Structure formats: structure tokens, C-alpha cells
Image (cartoon, rainbow, N blue to C red; front, side):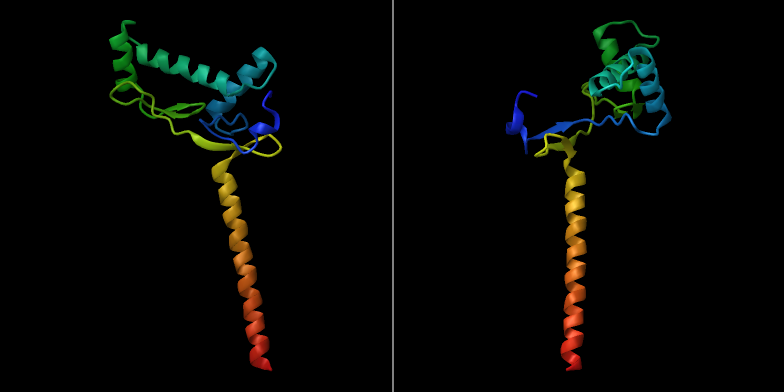
Length: 145
């Protein structure tokens, strides 16, 4: 984008949409989208899709009045399996989503920060194990002399 290198190491939150997921409902959406638009859907297309399906379910059999929409969202949508993850609404009608934390890497790609931390922790555990083995060998060598 226009931010160039200034975007590196910036953090942001975003809900999840994995177009390569093997979940059948996600693959149906991705395949239908590709067939119609000849491109892979992005997160905005996925949110639009989820929004329309949730709204349709919330309004099923109800008049399209604002209070009825709110009731429908609260009463009808429980852990709805959207392509952007499970969807539900609280008593105020606010969506309950759990975004992930992402970081823009030095090569300007979006990295799941939790996955990056887990990888760093795994490398640290491997390094600790390597150090433990070296210390053990040194102790054995010192005991043998």
C-alpha cells in the first residue's frame, strides 16, 4: 500500500477468514464466489456473505422492524457457523466476535501474532533443550576426568 515500510511492525486486529479452510460451508462459499467473480473472496466478501445469511435467519418469519431485527439476532443466532467464524449476539444486539491480533511483518505481509509467538516459544524450548543437553555432556565429561 501507500504506507510502505512505515507499516512494518504495526499491529491490528481482524476476524478470521481462511479461504483455504477445509470446512464444507467455507468451501461452498469460496467455490461459488470464484465461479461468479473469477477471483478468491477476501475478508470483506466473507463478512458481507455472513451478514446477509445472519440477517435472513434473524428476519425469518418476523416483520422487518428494527426491534424485531434485534430480537431475531438475539434469539435466533446462537453460534451461527459463519465463514468468518462462529457468530452470536448479546442482549444489546452487539455481535460477539473474537478477532485475532496480527502484525505487519518487515516484508509487509500480515502475520498472525499468536502463531508468531508460539513459533518463538517453540524455538526457545528447542534452544533450552539443546543447552540442557550440552550441560549434561559437560557434566559427564567433568565427572569422567
